[in-house]
Amino acid sequence: MQVKANQPTRFQALTEAFESQEPLSSVPHDEQARGRHERRTTRIRGPPEDLAEEWTGLQRVIDVNRHVVREGQGTLAHHDSISRLASDDAEMFATGIRGQWSIENRLQWVKDVMQQEDDSGIQKGNGVET
Image (tube, rainbow, N blue to C red; front, side):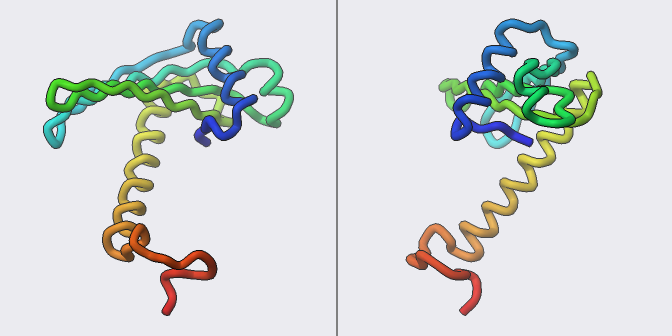
């Protein structure tokens, strides 16, 4: 499960854990597509003690750094996730997280392009039904 900045206390605890703990494992991935070069580095760590107590079953904390270069311009993004799996296999987590992003991207395309959700003025109810 991805932890986002709208959960500031948890997000800060994860950030501090990443700064204070060496990764259990790490794996880089390079991808060249659609005129851009992307390098993703996935790192696995144990959970901070306070979060492990708060979230029953929390076993691993995963961070993915994405560096994308397009037309000479670079951007850096950081994503944190948590897992109940006790694996130290960074490759397995990287594959799973990338697969989830792919699903979300395809879903958003359908909602935005096919269902024209971004153009909808509907504020309540189910906008897909007519």
